[in-house]
Image 1 (tube, helix red, strand yellow):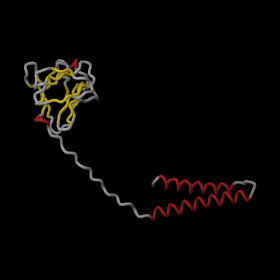
Image 2 (tube, helix red, strand yellow):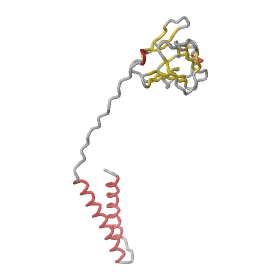
Image 3 (cartoon, helix red, strand yellow):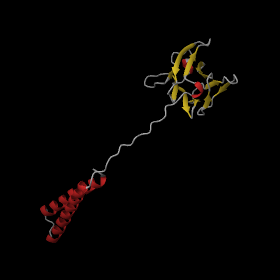
Image 4 (cartoon, helix red, strand yellow):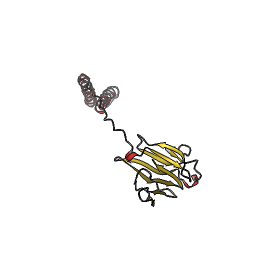
Length: 189
């Protein structure tokens, strides 16, 4: 039931209670008793008529809303995976980025699960539980430092320079760029 119908039903119950109270108690005046009983009966009849009219209304046709399916994300500029590199440049582990829109980089810690888990990194003590995030937006990938203690760096393949990321400011990444999280190197491939 809707709020209006519930209110109407409560008024009907109140009307019955008012009429019964007026009838069963001695108010000292027949006029007062009669007026209270009349008000109670009128409230009850009004709520009953309102409820009957509501129930006789045709039911609203419920049309299911078709949700527009979101287009599946496609890897930007050929970026399809993130590789954890050893100090020698060997791939230790890879994560697939295809059809992903966001990945948290950090360390799994009890109930806090991350997408890119660097718990086994020799530099894990330098990595926050939620250290950085990799987001896909407007056909490009972006990396953002999550106010980590030791910061996040980005080595751009385009110019070979290493940049310190500012917390909370996304930085566009390209294939071949290396994200450095607590001295752990993650290459976009």
